[in-house]
Amino acid sequence: MAKLPAMPALAGLYPPAPDGIVNLEHGYFGAMAQPVQAALVESVDYLNRHLSPFLRGAQALEYGAVLCARLAKLINAEPHEILLTRSASESMQVLIGQYHRLAPGDGVLWSNLDYPAMRYAMAWLEGRRGVVPTELHLSLPLSGDALLEQYATAIRDTPGLKLILLSQVFPANGQSVPVREIAALARARGVDVLVDSAHALGQLPVDVQAMGIDFAGFNLHKWIGAPPGLGFAYIRSSRLDRIEPHFGDRDYPADDIRGRLHAGMPPMSAIMAAPVALDVHAQLGGSPAKGARLAWLRNYWVQRVADLPGMQLMSPLVGDTALAAFTIDGMRALDVQAALLARFGVFTVERHIGDVSLVRATVALTTTVEELDRLVEGLTVLTGEAAGA
Image 1 (cartoon, rainbow, N blue to C red):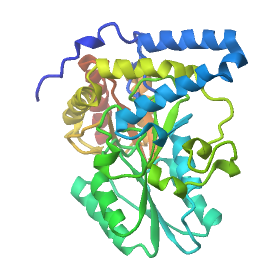
Image 2 (image 1 turned 180 degrees about the horizontal axis):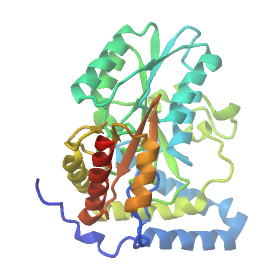
Image 3 (image 1 turned 30 degrees about the horizontal axis):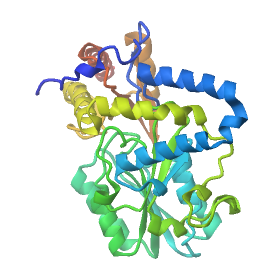
């Protein structure tokens, strides 16, 4: 295995971890770098002192416009195609709930590996729009070729298919999805694709032109390292009319993306601090450098436990994201999670895929080999005990 990619700019950039716990659940929320945290504190103070004269003025609007422009550049879009939201979940719910080119009897498709809230929203369209819902059942582990083949079959065989929810990275097991290829298959049949890029932005390339996608949702608190409470949606301008205004919003013209979410009070302090997170992202080498380091750390521990007795990898042996999932024969995932924490001081998370429970471990840029060795030690002990039970 090649050496861990060096990243000198990391030194002193992030706060030290608490003693005693190895955090391997960085997929929910990624630490802000020290300059981002300082910018957030400063913005909260400024907001609290200036109040409505600032929030209702041109200066606050300019902060939002600057951030939209930078986010557009990050994903190769245009600033007027960016809608600021409070999370990837809110972004995707805007896209799903307000997509109005559906008629009773049309088909909509998603998979059991998509994020739960997004699956719920797609299923809700049955009552909302009268559509026929279909969940594609994918069994793990699954190769990339098999994944593409199953989507191709589903796109071809789902009656009246008009809309697909597609994750760029499956949140349960960290597997990246061939979005460009699947989107092309859908486009050839006149099917729109809503891409959930919550786990992609910041560790994988995201180029909406190269991917050939018209709609996507993102957050900024996972792999970009912005303050929590901030996300965005991308809607290609030529497809904006397919997403209806938010609850009949009249504050903006029909061709203004801002009318697609009436959020009330914006997360202004996060908006003000987010450009610093984008600066840090660039300072660290952007998604190529960050993704390479995260994948190396993930592959380091995965390849050391793959052949343990009773270990079932639910992710590819070699992956390109920070996340990976597994089960241990004879142990409930929740019991594995609890044992890793109580006995070895390693924090992971249980995730569900239908009736199957997994344990997911997610590294960060600052994760050390020594911390991963503790995970490997814990899994070696637990698999040995389960095999001998």
